[in-house]
Amino acid sequence: MGKLKMAVKAGQRTVHARRTGERHAAAGQRELPELDRLIHERIRLGIVSALAVNDSLSFNDLKRVLKTSDGNLSVHARKLEEAEYIRCKKFFDGRMPRTEYRLTSSGRKAFEDYLRQMETFIAVARG
Image (cartoon, rainbow, N blue to C red; front, side):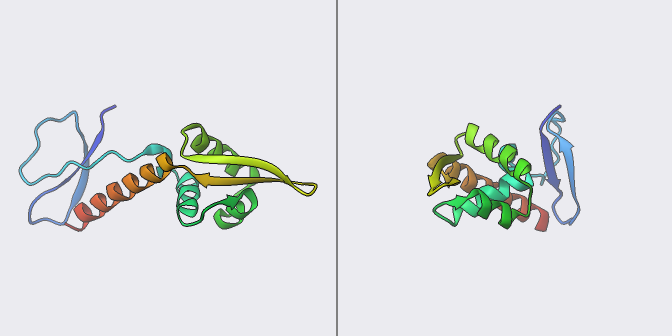
């Protein structure tokens, strides 16, 4: 399956998607950047966004902010951790186990790139 391309014709407000496999680009069309699929999923975007504005957050803080289940948060956090976008630290606070997450420098860069990509999408959609 080819990459999607968004096209906007000059003077028109309509936006449509087409495959980049079609090499006959009409004049006035703009190719959009490919989104980071790892971040683009709703829960993972929420995790990265929350960590971008906080030094660290606990598992329970993220669960509350994102309004999701333990299992769902755990699966998505693990994917971000495997990609080295976030770092997980497990420890005990007295007798209570605690899990804390931080955004890594590569995660911050990926998030900033993602935001730039979305800004491009918005600019093209607004024409």
